[in-house]
Structure formats: C-alpha cells, structure tokens
Figure 1 (cartoon, rainbow, N blue to C red):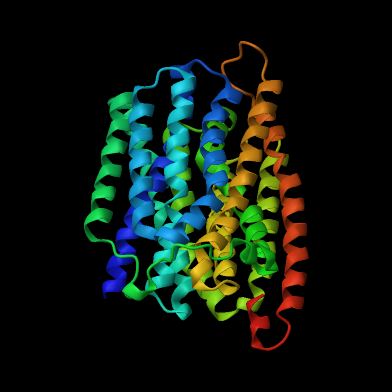
Figure 2: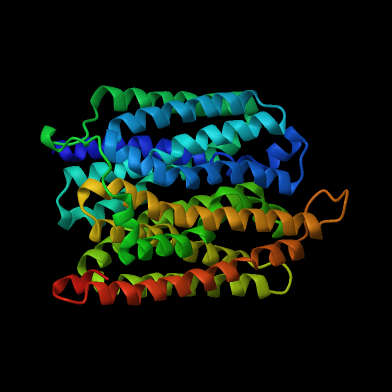
Length: 412
C-alpha cells in the first residue's frame, strides 16, 4: 500500500507540471493581445519552454541517477512556481519567454523523476501499466488548464490566473517535501557516480524508444499545447467553449486509452513497435480527412480527429517501456531522459513550422489566420511522420538482431 502512496505523491507533482506546461495553450489568443505579438513570436513562448525541456532531459536524467526523485521534484516544482509568478506579471514578450523557460526547466525534472519512483517501488511486471497510468492521469493537468483557465482568464484576468497556478504548484512542492521517499530500500539510494549514459545510448533499444516517442507524441501534443485552440476557433470557426471541450476530450480520451495500451504492451511486448506504427498511420489518416475537407470540417469530423489523437500520448509512453526493457535500474534516469527528448524535439519543430507558415500566409493587418493557412501549416506533420516512422522501423530491426538470442526477443 505504501508504494501506491509514494506513486500518488509523485503523480500529484506531475499533474501540476502538466498543468503548468499546458497553461499557455488556452491563453494563446489572450497572449497575442497582452504582448502585442504575431503568431511566430507567440510560438516562441512554447518553443522556449519545449526547447529547454528537451535540452534538459539528458542532464536531468544523469542528475536523477545521482540524486534521486525527491530532490529533483522539489527543485523542479520551485522553478515552475517561480515561472508562473513571473508570467503573471509579464507584460512584454521578453519576461514572458523567461518565465516559460523557468517552467520548461522545472517541467523537465518532473516526469522522469516520477517514472523512477515507479521503477523503484513497483515490480517489473507492473511497470508498463503503471507508466501508462502515470502518463495518462498526469494529463489531468492539461484538462485543468483548458476550461478552468479559460474561465479564470475571462473573469479574473491574467495576473490572478497565473498566480493561482503558482499557488497550486507550491502545494505540490510541500507535499513532496513532507512525504515522498525515493525507494523502499535505503540501500538502493542513488549513487554519486557516472552510471553509464553512453551504455544506454549505445543500445538500439534505447534509440527505438527515442524514435517511438518522437513519432507518436508531436501531433496530439502540439494540438493540445498551442495550435489546436486557434485552429478550432479562428480556422474552423468553433465557439471558444466548444474548442475547450474538444481539448478536454483529447485529455479524457488519453486517460481511457492509456491503461489499455499499457495492458497490451505487458501482454504482447514483441508487438509494441507494430502498435506504434499503427498509431502514426491512424493520426495521419485522420488529419488527411480534415485537411482535405472542402471548407470548414463538420463537428463530427473534428471530434473524430480529436479521438484519434487521444492515442498519441499513450503511444509515446511506449518509448519509456523500451528504456526500462533494455537498461538496468541504475541508469534508468539517463535512458528515460534520452527517450523523452524525441517527442519534444519533434514538437518544437512543428510549433515553429506552423507559426512561420501562418505568418507567411496571413496578410499584414489581418486579425486572424485563414482556414487555408492553418491547413497548409498543419501539413508539415507529414514530413515528421515519414522520418520518424522510418527510424522506428530501422531501430526495430536493429534491436531484434541484438537481442535475438533467447526470450528477450519478445521485448523488441
């Protein structure tokens, strides 16, 4: 029972980290007015946050193997609280970017720290399911940043909204300080030495996890994080409440699908990469239907798109299962950090591409981008899907060759 308490504490910290990460998503339109910037500069807020998050993954993974989850969760939580306080007071793009950088650094310390808690407190047979549950329940933070933040922004204003977010983050930090333990066995405490990051990178199974995360996460992630709300409201003409509801559906659907995918990976680990490629294919097919629809897509088709994208988050969690499968616990932090870089690099590339295309195709002085501009911008996803899927296929074959002797073959 104690293991579930430790997991719950870590999970609370992760929920709040996702809340902080996603808080810009529904504030994008308000941010353009507050800071007086266009879509390309608005994208820089998310890019700064995600670039720092991705860039910090490997250093944070090494620190995690040295210092443990509790210390990194406290440090990350404090950084995110500071970032939200600064964001609440920012009225120019410079301080706003600095605030999102602080949030990105703190966010980078959170998820992989919670995954280490899972690895230390739960038996290997439960890991795939617990990782999925962690990732999907954590997305409640995105749900809390959708409808509630829209309401607060309209009724309480910008400073009060983000100061309230900072207050929630402080509660999570206090909970971690007061109750979290790194491991049930004091002898298993993190060792202060180099635990072999190069060995993790050298194994093709780690790289398979990296490209799995890369190719599955970005479409749903970018849609939820920044560009989905403007696409639905400005491009497709939906009411703000309807758009917020669809973003909430994206989160709820992911929570439902996560345990199912975790169960699949636990029962049929040999077919994990096949599931990954299926997720990529379904996402591309759903977007193709929306982008080729003449004019504005009907609500049922947009809902179908969101339902398909709900599998993206759980699909990216498969990458962390690869990290666990092919690395010992002593270097799990570094391996997990390597994997976690993938999806966020892809997301950064897509966020920038969409912002640039929208700026190029939107006439000077126009209040909003046209639906046609949004469709051209979102077509950039196909390049990332093609490249990522090719890498998954490549490292699937390499991993299977490396582990072809004995029952470990089932892990590829």
